[in-house]
Length: 627
Image (cartoon, rainbow, N blue to C red):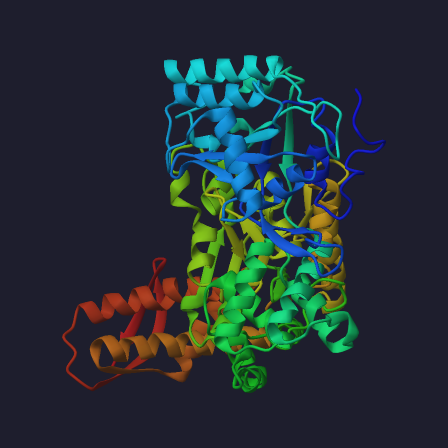
């Protein structure tokens, strides 16, 4: 295969790679299918011999690159605007383009919207020109030509058959100018995805080249940031170290955005009076669609400091877990999560992995964090991962892929975060999820974003993610049975070491997902067993809750005599393997049920004083005596 330059794209230095690829292969391909990042702006060299780079839309970018190869015009068609000739305008170049198009296609009516049969005539006139005129024909929104690429109507089938034949019978054109060698007049298809065209059109057809237009990389974003800095009165950002640093920070925060989005962020910043150095805040506003940022509220530090006293009153018996959790929360408030990484701005605010015995306060601590940061527990979102054990159940989180039933509804996780990105998200019992679903968390933990079934990007950069697990409580023995790995009474340091080792083994050996374990890093928080002292506090707290509920529901002031209280305490705190939840279940059986039976048989008066004088068992049934 011969091309016009020794290396692909060597003729247009400074232009996007996909443009150089197209330009370098015009002598061997008559049609191109362009897909991917079609609606972006693209960096192009200056119009003259000097000056800054330019940001051009795709149509203008294609036209200017084609013009450098001696093309006279670019004819563009889309179902809305019909047929147009580029470039538009009143200058000599635009007039020359219209004359060239008229010689090829005849007189064009304004906003001409031809049928598929009419399009075949235009395509033939360009690809097999009667005169030595270089022109290109661009089919915009080509994904919409056919209702479905695999079930074509007769007219659609005939049109694509014609295009396939035209790709092989097109005639190269030789003209005087910068590229005198024969070049095809290309047909350019713009499609959202390559599969939007009939597969047989491009399959085994060397005359048609498929080119994917990628999203901008960091270098593109950095150069664009420096161009956009001019809007803030900075003509040369590289001459000002502070401005250069601000541009680099802007480019890093814009990870995942298009260059056109960066332009819109700059416009948003100017409207809000944001300085160049504060553009990352404008990026957050653009990504999340909200102006208020709870993380920037001045009282948040005070609330977290107060939480050092309040959280231990709610989550009892877990001083080590609370301290480590609050440390990570302070890091999140200060915006230092992942600060050691080169690019950390788009990662979640905080990531926690709660592991340890059941009933020890993991869920309660997650609720406490939510109340501490966001003021109420309504920002707390919980997913029971045991419901996601099937391989296809991940569609519930992000939505079904295109073409499947319900894909337009989106996913439970992505919809909730899009609605309110400032959340605590709890993934309970993560080890019960299907391994394929765990892969979805890789992108969230690393890049702070996820694409749902509708193709929309959801950002998790302002969320706190909490994973809970009972891993490490039991481990496999050499004979295949499961044996207890940790037990009440062990020193906390030993429990922590054993559980962390079991968690690491599960992700690396069992799931073969060491990269996911690396994303959690040192954010694994191990909970201790509930001890006797903590059990007494939990018991007292839950009894007080019961008495308060009775007062609220029935205006009855209930107290428990000391002897009855100690009997009940001995029954409810005898077995601590189930933690605080086990104490609650025991209280329900030994106190709430018999109390409800006793109260149901009487008509208490308003503000009546009632005392539980005794609690006793008779024939396996618990009774309470009231006075």
